[in-house]
Image (cartoon, rainbow, N blue to C red; front, side, top):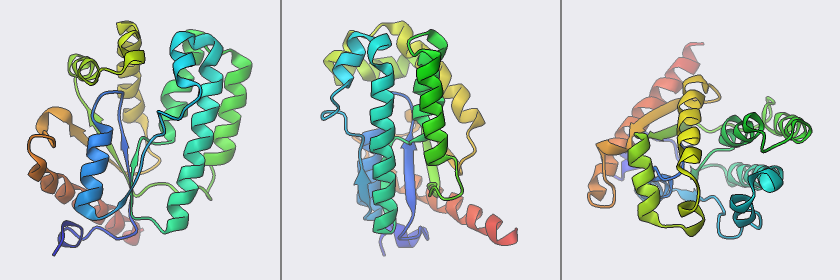
Length: 224
């Protein structure tokens, strides 16, 4: 019996991994997909035509970047559900508006007109009864220092030149965002409670928690 069957996780489940830069979303996505025999859906960073430009000039490129991410994530969400589920998804579409676009608007690096256009488009695409939300969102969290250490360790050049204040701002906003998030059930995992690279067998305890949470959610839905 594989782990998916052992912990009664539906074969058509869609699980999204969320969290700030550097918390290990890609590692978790890969490990869970292997454990559950699910497909993966990764954020397209290397092919993004705006990312390098954005890190050089937030104000000029923030709107372009967010529109690009929104379009790509919406297309990917549609693809996932056309397959019939069975996916682990790296980063959620909800973070785009709840974290990044709002942060740039608040800080003045996205002007009010662009922000209104972006949020109107997001609401029209996502905040409707027809949009297929994930079965579970796994939120990876850790201290600011742990996150910054991981960003330094992974060594992406564009991230190394980003001011520390940017990561502080993002870390705080993620904490506020997840406390208010209610689009789907949330499982919070502390990144210091496991090390999937050194101890890959730890994935089973995470799968067990996922199975329990999905079961409780489904039971609640039936009671309603």
